[in-house]
Image 1 (cartoon, one colour):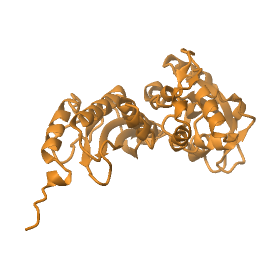
Image 2 (tube, rainbow, N blue to C red):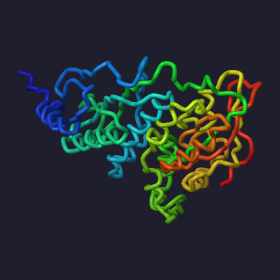
Image 3 (tube, rainbow, N blue to C red):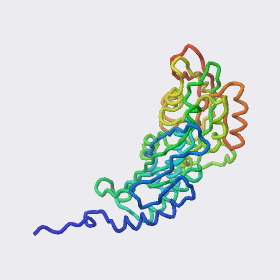
Image 4 (cartoon, helix red, strand yellow):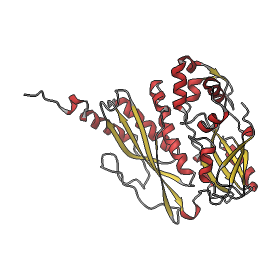
Amino acid sequence: MPQKISYSSAGVDIATADKTKKGMAESLKTDNPLVLNTIGAFASVCEGVFPGFAHPVLVCKTEEPGSKQLLAFQHNRAKGICYDLINHLINDVIVMGAVPMFIQDLIVCGKLEQDVISQLVKHIAEACKAQGCNLTGGETSEQPAVLAPGTYVLGASCIGVAEKNAIIDGKAIQPGDRVLALQSSGPHTNGYTLIRALIKQDPTIIDAMIADRGKNPAPKKFLDLIMEPHRCYFTALKDLFKENGLHGMAHITGGGIPGNLNRILPKTLNAVVDASLIKILPVFSFIKDKSGNDDTDMTNTFNLGVGMTIVVDPAFADTAIEHLKKHDVLAYDIGEIEKNGSGVVEMRGELQW
């Protein structure tokens, strides 16, 4: 007779999974009347009526925090990677002028560790609530042999809502508009395959002290700087969505400014960015020195300190900068929109390292 093989002995413990899911209920509690059911159902049910919107349209996006999550779990930074996941996701939704409403998460693991999963869901829910939206459910999947025990892969999807006649997609961009840079908190969630390669080459660099910039210029460890959570710009930007002077927004992720600002440009216009005006964060200078990459490689891989760009009417630029300053977001002018273009970003000037 063949030896009995149960689901549990094969590596999946349903009892632990059920117990873990019941423990998630507290993290998913909400008083949002648009959320109509709770954890335990096969799918989440949300009201399709959105007060304050005359003609609401749904803005949908799915994201994951890239290979930064490998570093996060190696260095006990689980909370931070949850904020990375949600903040990156929400930034991609808000650049359309949308308000994030509902988020569903995905956690895939090699072995379901109840305490770890509970903390991940708790922090993901906290990150959602910090931006005024709800984690309405998701999926937790234990996949032994597919992933090693202790390995977690995170993902999430968001549904946002925008006014149909007020979608911000770059169509309003005109020649003469200004390009404003919004400062990032660090590499955010891009370029970490290169960063991990640097650490593998020289593990001691995680303890290297680097002078920070901003309100707290005291030196910080390289590890702390690269693990700073992805900054979310929703709170700072949301009150500008209704302003006619805001013509476009671009979330600066993989591909840097050239590979993201171009995604919102009309095909007959170019954005000209003065590289010398970019306030490069010291962590990027350190990465450049250690990696040997030239300016082009660095520009096309990292945000260099610019986590978001917005395109505004020249007459609205100062107002936008002052508004963002009130929300502790440093914003400054780095370029303009030129006519007779082809929808590309031209980088002019030299980066000031």
